[in-house]
Length: 183
Image 1 (cartoon, one colour):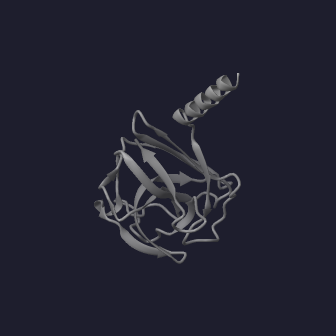
Image 2 (tube, rainbow, N blue to C red):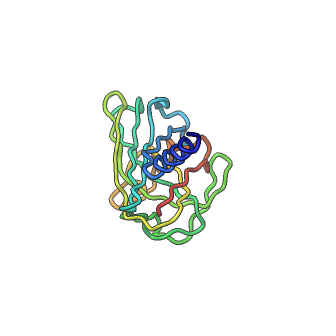
Image 3 (cartoon, rainbow, N blue to C red):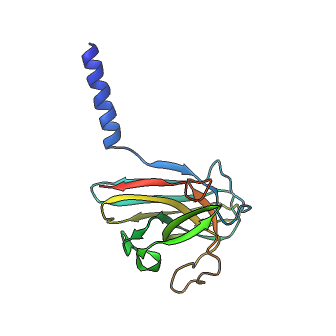
């Protein structure tokens, strides 16, 4: 009986990890703007990896942010070098060496990928979902970000006029990261 219980527990653990569901993370104030409104209890980033397809699914959700506003969402990668693309998205600067920046008293090498926009309604609620891939196998150390406006680092956008980060996940400090592994 004891052996069967142990075997069942091991199988349950292995099954749970083989078919792990989505990971949900809360937003923290960004490393540039600390006063942008947001309901931190209900706003979140949800992500999951599809190992067979080598894709990353991400949903960015904002609640009680600034009403009727466009926010740009993306991913900051902490690195020394990085490829030219992350799945089907180009990396800012074309890949190669990562730029060193200092935020909240922390200096790190980073590059980023701009993913999309969240448009909030009259209550400041909005979301954006995306599937990125296929992604090259590897472990990626990153933070999700929400920028103060749209068009940063994008052709036809407003350039770099306001690339400030309003929200980061996981945070609360620049350089607090999540590691996502693509097998």
